[in-house]
Length: 127
Image (cartoon, rainbow, N blue to C red; front, side, top):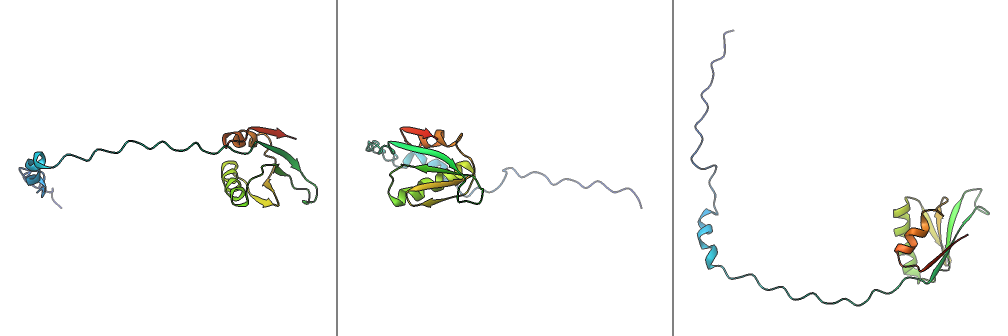
């Protein structure tokens, strides 16, 4: 086998490519001005969270497994489900709603008060 012959590179075109919108560039000045955005509407104050919550860890009746129980939130049933999902995602654990309490798997007493306060609970009691 012999040496390969170097191929001549094709000459670069004058323009990088055919731009179908090039003709429109000259018509920019004829376009109407953008509409003025309406001023932002002041939103109503968000409702405050529950006044208090009691956080405690329990093992009884659960086969020796630790769970963290959040009581006294006094939230309506749909709100409890929303709060439970947000807390489970933030803590990376499982959980369930039992009666009026939120039950989270594992001992979450150290991390949970900060999350509850961020959601608007004014007083968190850890027991």
